[in-house]
Image (cartoon, rainbow, N blue to C red; front, side, top):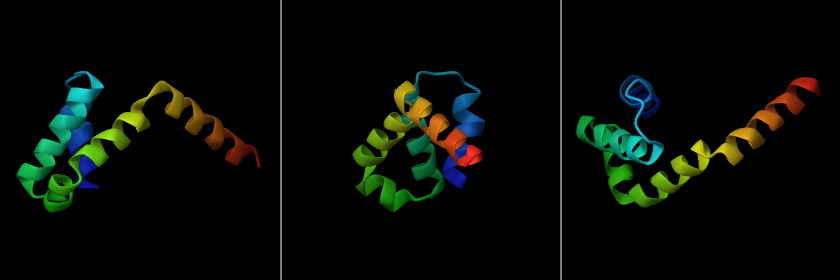
Length: 72
């Protein structure tokens, strides 16, 4: 939850490119002790997952699935 809060408060408002935004969010989480050990050990994986989730293709797919669930 804190990861998302940091993302929303510090990154979305700053309007920086997604790749840098992911790195900034991870850095801030580590500095504040949120998931610090996990993020240090799995940083590359987390960055890859976050970049995938931010891609236009993923957002479109997730939106379509959400609509199907609502209709179903």
